[in-house]
Image (tube, rainbow, N blue to C red; front, top):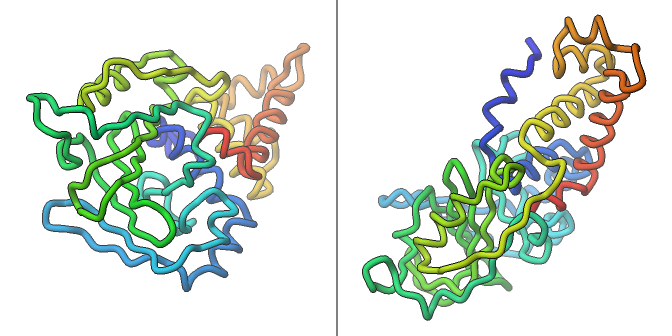
Length: 262
């Protein structure tokens, strides 16, 4: 049964994870990922729980989509961790901070294993080692200086907050994460039009369009059958028009617009 509730589990995703949800539906990305199967990384899970991902060669196909490698497009952002290229990570909430001069909570040098959340290291040629730290309310991607894994020093990090926090300008979690990095201020800004509910509705509309579902049925899933019966084609701002815009928003995000969320 296709309904809205199955999408609600995505509402706490960071914007960078929403970007993957739209990108992985792109027929062009799916085709490119299939061609690049030989570049799939080696993954291991350490005893301490950290995941280490190693790629032997740069995947230029993935880099064209803003990724360092292709996660399996069948896997949602709840089940995989995309590593975005730094050059496309510029829109949602960014903070480039040198950490080597900062001490930890009790005067100790900051260690990566002190950072809260699920940690995923990416080791590959031509770029610094990356670390993604994921927690329910945010995902932070850090570039690592040095070869020591799993607790190297970090040079810079790019901190991503959830769409919900950005939409409501609730930056509590920025302060929480910055506190772990012993930083006093982090510049932040919200992105308009990308609340988790709006992104969810655009994703529903996109999935319906890709499956050739009638627009009125898409609207019923998003807005409810009762509202659609009453307001599908009545008034100046009809649900028919709103559904059309949701489909267009979803298609735009899938076709490269997802990079605006990273």
